Image (cartoon, rainbow, N blue to C red; front, side):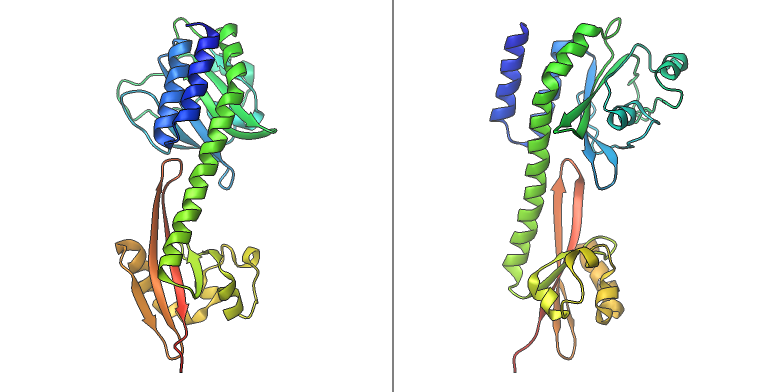
Length: 285
């Protein structure tokens, strides 16, 4: 296939297919086929945790959400850390790795899968506006990847960056929409969203008013809910029950009723996100 035809088909796939998983299976596999690589994978960068997450591994096995720290302890991590292309003939050859950087290590996140062996690797940072979005890796080519393969990935990496950026934004937008929908369907009162450690993720303006504006969203974020509202401390078990069993519950106090609502959302990029919404209702009269 001519390079121009390859670019056209790749761009067409990105533009027409907005399903996250299907999009990256197709895009990554098209690149793999063009390079004549045995396998390929795409990682996206989770800035909050400073890790790379596996997005797609185009082999018969489907592996989701492998985490790799952004450091020199792996080839993918090193690629993101330095924002440099790595073309390695044999990832198991320590001398070759040391020649690149004495601290560079090869970490195989798929060691537990029988039949998967990595030899040569072309690892490319996916960058947009100077920021790292992820890492693309082409794996195993006979005899190994050459400079022409590097040139191809340099040329198409901006296309991958646009696709990855759109998918990340789309996924986070769907999280926000799901949370908003769940909240709006249940309440029009003060609400606070907490994570699986009962730490505050966000809250609405009514909740801020209810607590006397003692905390900004930034100040309250990552604080335990019972630090902000000691009245719920004796009801943490009920909150955990709602999260674990996905069943709404209620806390009835003298002057307030608290509705506890489970919020679950499956994100292909980041896995299942589990939240709990606390909805505060002050009875009239």
